[in-house]
Image 1: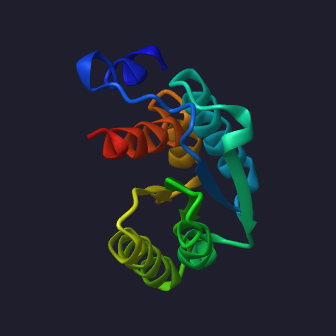
Image 2: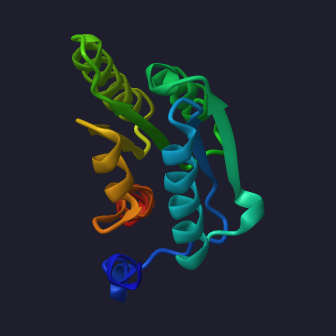
Length: 155
C-alpha cells in the first residue's frame, strides 16, 4: 500500500481531518467487497481521515451502488463517496448490462453533485481475477479508489 499512498504526497497533500467520506458497499460477493472495503478504509485512515468521518452504507448488490452513492453524495456533510462492488461474469449477458448500468450510474452521481465518487467496482471474468484485485497479487482496488477521491479533493 505504501506505493499507492505515496502518490498522494508533496505540496498538493490535502488535510483530511475535516473531510467526510461515504463508502457504499455492495453485499453481493461479500468475500471480495469486504476486502475492498477494508483496503479503502485503511487507506483513508493512513492518508489522514478520522474514523468518525468515514461512514459506511451497505446496498444489496452492485446495481444498487449508484442510488446508494446518490443518497450519500446528496448530503452536504459528505465530501466524497467510494463505491465498492464486484460483478463476476456468468453464463448470460446479465454481466454486461449490470456493469454498464453501474458505471454510468456512478459517473452520473459525480456530475450531478460535483463531488468525487470513485468506481471501486471489480468487473471480472471469474472469482480468481477478483481475488487478485482484492488484496491479491494485483493489489487492492479499494485502496486505489480511496486514493482517487483524495486526489480529486486536492485543489
